[in-house]
Length: 364
Image (cartoon, rainbow, N blue to C red; front, side, top):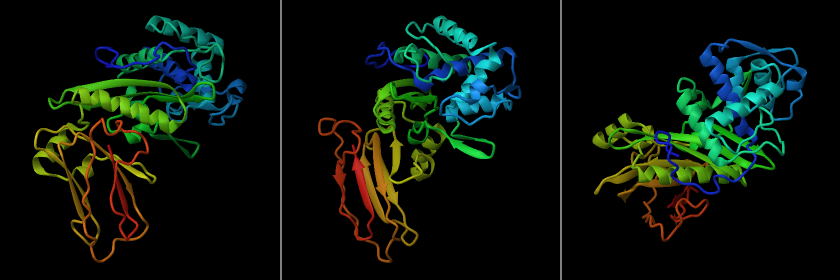
């Protein structure tokens, strides 16, 4: 979905009923943001933890009945940890009871135009009557981003600390896809792996493009993330909105600054995925350079008129040898006919394995 126009760019089974799981917490966050906007609560406001909240099923923070939690911590825990006990604390803090809060959730859903959604709890824990659709979740995500721009940067949180322990986000699209703004993930056995996310990129005229993507019912977190990334890439390519940092991109094109320093996004664990989204013109090429501590230029690879290249680098534990190995020629298969776009775990071209154990793979 295009955020500005509300136009649906691509959909499949968008009105099929499914279980929202923790995507339910987006509505809990919506009502928290609304209360903040109205001045009913502040970030420093504290809510008490009830026995009911403390005894919620996991995922949870392990709260103790009677302790106080600030609204700021509530929001961070809902987004990053997706804590069920925190969702109940928020519901009881904003309303007289969880039942009253759920009633507010359903009224707000109806007002926003979520015609096929019914909430039964504020967290998304399993309930056969709590259902939604991908279309309705997109409507809610759009409302969150447009109605509360002052708070939506919170969806970018990668981690937060509580009682000295650091919790990291379940939304790996934030790290895997440049320009991703984050939103919410969700999972219960009955729903599969769900995600609602957004991405902001710029075209060659420096105009921002923000897209929303909702995917429901993935078989694994990896499948879910890969499909969302593929859908977003296809939509951005059509809009030629590939730059996620205009200043760095323009500088790199004009001065030849190594793009790896300012453009590439890497994961923390091997295998290391490097994604280089580019908008190129006739005659422009993508130059990838691998440096070692002993050799200024180890290998150069050029790909003419590259638009999007995924590189999987597998590093061996050994150091580069004193003598530089002979460069290996590499060809890149890029036609859609020869290989489905970004099909996971499919190697297009494999170079000769070097004696050091260093391997390089290229995928279409």
